[in-house]
Amino acid sequence: MEIDPKRYGGKQLLRREIPLSSSLFEQALQQHCFKKIPGIRKEKGHAYCNRCNASDAHLQSIACQKCDQTHLYCRNCIQMGRVSACEQLYEWTGPEPAWPVHTTPCAWNGELTVHQQVAANAIDRAIQLNDRLLIHAVCGAGKTEMLFQGITSALQKGKRVCLATPRADVVRELLPRFREAFPSVAMQALYGGSPDKTGDGQLILATTHQLLRFYQAFDVLIIDEIDAFPYHADSMLHFASDKAKKTACASIFLTATPRKKEKQAIKANTLPHVFVPLRFHGQPLPVPSSKICFGLNKKLKKGNLPKGLLTWLQKRTNPTRQVLLFLPTVALADSLQKDAISALYPFAKKIQSKNPAETLIRTVHAADKEREEKVQAFRNREIAIILTTTILERGVTFPSVDVAVLDAAHDVFDEAALVQIAGRAGRSPADPTGEVVFFHEGRSRAMDQAVKAIQDMNHRASKL
Ligand SMILES: [Zn+2]
Image (cartoon, rainbow, N blue to C red; front, side, top):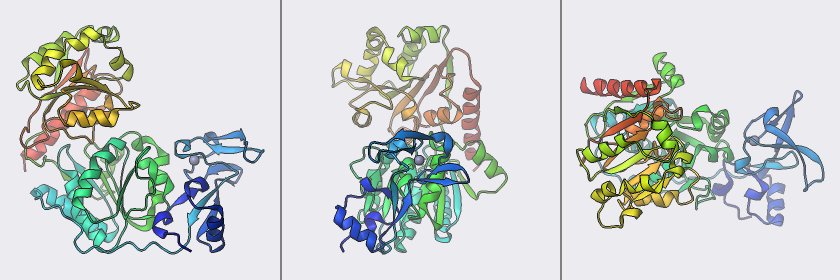
């Protein structure tokens, strides 16, 4: 029978995720290529979802049209397709997939800085020894390039590697860079709505949600941006990433803004770690400045922009830098008045003079259907000023931008978010500085913590 173990190996799937004809699937079951696992299991009076491990409170009764019974289904992992008590998950138990051994898989021939190299060596060693390792590298340290050496070692041994991250934007940003670095390696990028769906690559780039479909699949699991929403606070995603690992598996965690849990583990030395304090171009991180705007919230709610923003735009040291303008909510971004936006046109024209002014300013948010196109257009400098929610706080690199945060004291801007947002500026060696301004009506603790964290990192870097 011709079923490719690479397609199903290391996965637990619903029947509808297995595109085999009934007869072929029956045949595969008879040959013990798949093992059946109930979608929902009962244990000591409690029910659990076998895909995401959610229990009672997340499971709900449904009068099922398929089986005509009333039974439980899982609401917790429903965005990956419904797991019901009347359905099975199918785990591949056929022949182990044989992943190719690559002699020289890596085509990247750039050079690492001394600090990147220290981290790259540690990652390589952890991968060879199936260890755990945390890399704490400042925004713009060049984390991705630090991974290439270790991934190369893994591929040279015929191992399967996954790089997972909470954000789909990050997956999309990484894919072309990995394709370029590992041109001969079968690779897939998986996220909600991704063109790749089969997940049969030796090298998988995926959102952490996609790990729910994997089971004992990877020899190396790298989790980028471990502190990002929703991974950092979602036990389901931690369960999924544990489940996706083989028993012997290297776990590499990357972050620029460790949260309390990681900071404690670093302090207590319970998690091996390497700190990379310097950006790859050697310049310090831009330190945010703050501008108080009285009546800011009222103004924003009425759809107006604060005068302070226009004054700042007027006085920027480099008026040709693009502008990332962060807003706390989609509602605020959508409610901005036409006049308010028009007031930005002259500044947009200074940044890019070819296109008509009104096309140079765009708003983007999580549910935006044109999100990918807009981010790409901003990258191509076809958009001069982009108004965004926190979706662009991390994982995206634009070579020459200034950054403004409106209502920086709002709850959504926690310390990690503000450090990440500030980290968008000055990323390119050609323009290693950039302005970061927090517009506010009263400083928050998070704002102070973010500024202090950035100053601390710059201080540690300056002592090297
Ligand atoms: Zn579930």
